[in-house]
Amino acid sequence: MNVEQFAASLNEKGIALTDRQLEQFDIYYETLVEWNEKMNLTAITEKSEVYLKHFYDSISAAFYFDFTGSLRLCDVGAGAGFPSIPLKIVYPHLQVTIVDSLNKRISFLQHLANMLNLENIQFVHDRAETFGVNTIFREKFDVVTARAVARMSVLSELCLPLAKVGGHFIALKALHAKEELKTAQKAITTLGGKVEEMFTFTLPVEESERNIIIIKKEKQTPKKYPRKPGTPAKMPIE
Image (tube, rainbow, N blue to C red; front, side, top):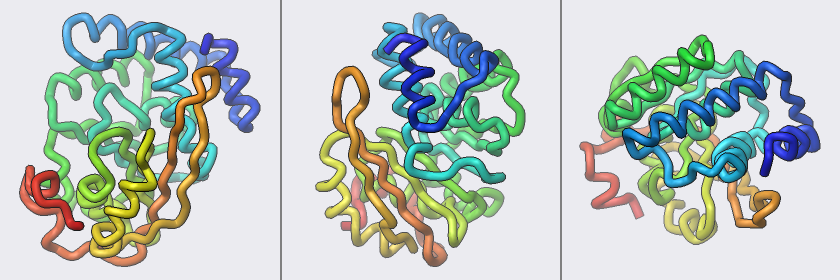
């Protein structure tokens, strides 16, 4: 997917990018490739692939969820900034908090935010499990996102405690999302969530499957969740 196809494909979905936004995506790409030479941020470095599998893929959440309001968004385990930074470029009014357990990635993201002149964005170096019990952040976000971090039963425990009641947790998944969702039903309910919708589509050009799972936070998460670091992955609620 070249830059023109990227812009045209988003335009078809009602997202018209300005010249400045296209410039920001270009800076994003150049910065990602430059930093990737000294630290492992992504296995995908070909420009057309980054635009399709990282940028377009991240923004695809906006095809099924309205990001236009004044929302506080938390991205759990964002890695090189996906999906939150592409979403922030498209919707600059979003107030974004990114939590990641690796300090090197946080350094990259802070540098990237400066290069892109992003405002109302903060980066927290922490494990999702300890971040989720911090009263400054717990149940404070309108939207919590995660992309390819862990399977749904584990991911729900890391993300749902951060969403406020009435807010949403949005998981961006590739294959096997239906199976993951079946196994995660108990976890989602236990943590106060309810699956609102799941959307399945294929990425343009290469036709690989993608899934957007939208979970509404209906009631408060019990205080004992999330459990200690490492526990959700070792002993998921299933």
